[in-house]
Length: 88
Image 1 (tube, helix red, strand yellow):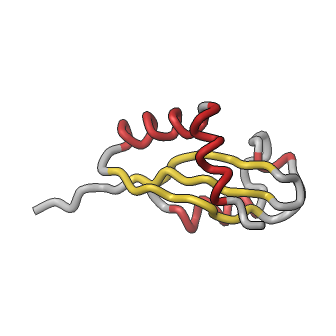
Image 2: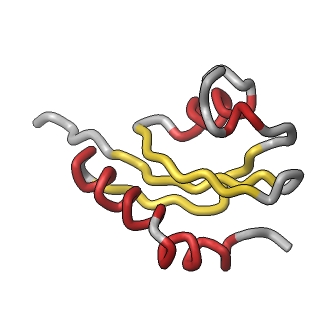
């Protein structure tokens, strides 16, 4: 029996800049490290100083479903939903 890959839709928050980033990955801890190490030089998250922290995650059974959910969370209503997870 082949184990099915799981995809994680995530939201990270930068308290210094008060910014939210939404993405999807198979390996959340590695992806968070890459955001904080500024490995993605041309990326949105590398533009800002300060640490990114995970504020929300959802696990889905396929990349296709993860991409759809990521788009939903990037909408106005999705971002409004995520605001409740921002640490005070």
